[in-house]
Amino acid sequence: MNILILGAGFAGHTAALHLSHLVRDTAQITVVAPNNRFTWFPSLIWVGTGTMAPERVHFELAPVYEKLGITYVGGRAEIVAPDDRTVTVRLPNGSTQTIAYDFLLNATGPYLNFEGTPGLGPKCGTTQSVCSVEHATAARDAYLESVRAMERGQRQRLVVGVGHPAATCEGAAFEYVMNLDWDLRNRGLRDKADLVWLTNEPDPGDFGVDGVEAKKRGSVVTGKALVQMLFDESKIKPMIAAGVTKVEQGTITYDQVGVDPGTLDYDFAMLIPQFRGIPLKYVAHDGSDITEKMTLPNGFMRVDADYSAKAYDEYRAHDWPALYRSPSYDNVYAAGIAFAPPHPISRGKKTNAGTVIQATPPRTGMASGIMGRTVAYNIADQIAGREPSHHARMSEMPAACIASMGKSIWNGSAASIIMVPVVRDFEKYPEYGRDMDLCDLDVGIGGAWTKRLLHDAFMWKLQAKPGWQMIPE
Image (cartoon, rainbow, N blue to C red; front, side, top):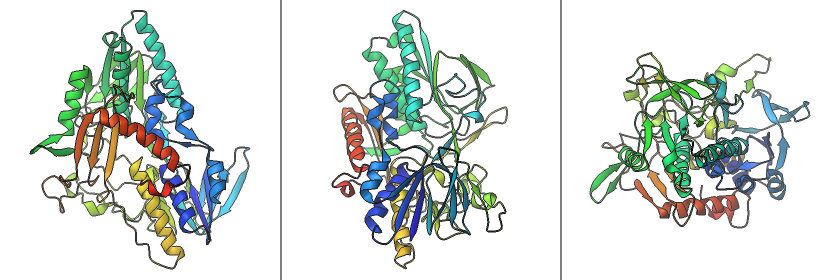
């Protein structure tokens, strides 16, 4: 029995770890990934501000897989033939290798669609990113250039947020802007910097999940109010419900709800690009292209979700997938960013010029790990001759997020957010769509300690060190 996993991020690597524990004696597990490296993405915001060394956020995959009896193939999947149960992989030397499978997990993660916004991204030399170790390191260097300019007395405008009207990962960008504020204050340079928060969220603190709420001392506290308060205290200018449409050196062109399109000058910018699915071609037994059958136009793979067109108010919790299994092939799964969400979680808006501004659903970190584990257990069920029995709908799944606002365990801070569930379920929780007895919002140094602890705990777990199974996703 052969299990093939494409991708070694949160979903793919977590699935590989659990499968090595569940079916090591009955199946051969193979992981295909272009880089022999796992990256702990939540700490890249610290790399991007120069407060953590790049080598502390990643480790080599091959030694971990060798220890677990997993085969690692360094390469990039190009063609999936689900009828033939094979995947064609492009190897670093340019040759190809065909790998057969009995079960397939697509956990390829995102394609960073910088070209979706003309002029965006480090390749164009205009804006920075913290979506990889290399990007975060380049962002650090560019940021430190602005720091040196401020030390010479030059005022700098730093713009942080998302670089496309339909981007995601607003939470990572929020962490980055708050860490810039903290770092500049520690350097005594905050008065020399104008910090701008540019986001496609409909409200501050939306984070692509329709906001967050929690009960505090008998009152309901909202993420919107909390983030607005933090921006007011830090003198960060928010530009909400805005989509970047073009970037040139020193100038961002944007379209914003309620106003005419405009431009914004900058000295440094870190803007998260739109995410799309990694380009994969799916072919039938006769060689015909079935990519449209297997994926949505954005490249993300169809799974057991309801993809029928609906108005926002008609979205339901059960639209979301439970198994993460292809509706066309019962031995093919997708998890993490690779699966196609059935619809947005946040409400979209339209600008005067007709641009749709839509924060798209985040599917990284804890959520991806839970999906990867769920798929592993479902594959184990099938190998044992049982029907898949493990569900992890995002409308049932909890999520905990620690948003860093300064790395130090002495004077840092963090916003701690707990949502249950991620996607609102108004049938189960009529008032807020979430279990308000379990949701929480807090800000303080305790969050900074927790964030740092999570870094160490998960770097331990994901290297499959002793006791790794005891650390939950």
